[in-house]
Image (cartoon, rainbow, N blue to C red; front, side):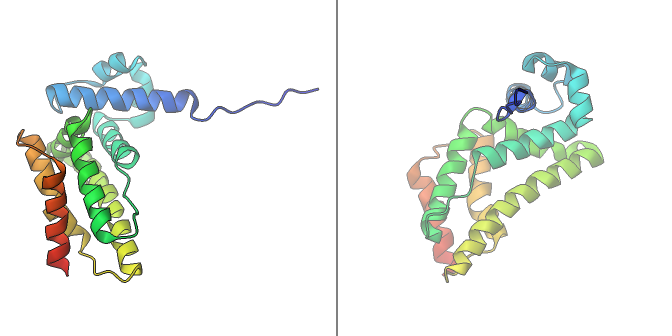
Length: 191
């Protein structure tokens, strides 16, 4: 009787990806983008640098993948049945995420990729497109429910930008009163 191979969810590849992404965001938060190498990422993640080069090719591509992975895994778009509560939940989650472990590193990565040449700009654009697609999903759901919804770029301007700026410059607090106010003002403006 042949034994059937059991496939583990995630496995080694997922563990390596998680460890490498965590190493990138930690190093970016500690030192800023451009102040660490693939070798340092590999050492912190406990993998060979050749594994990183084989899978991602460049530090820019790795950084973009880490930022996009963090964005999609840690910052899902809420679906509460109401645009107001979706935006409030989204604002609260973004504030919590960027204030928590890795959040500042991801923001610094996304900003730094702008100045990292063509590859870096492509990586930054991938990050922004991933975030924009998340916002488009929220807006499309609200529109399908018959709600008047803002343009996704208005969500960037009125919710993401203020939270990101406060985080990058250490201006607080990002408490529920603040994040709810951002969401409520955007809904009021869209009405």
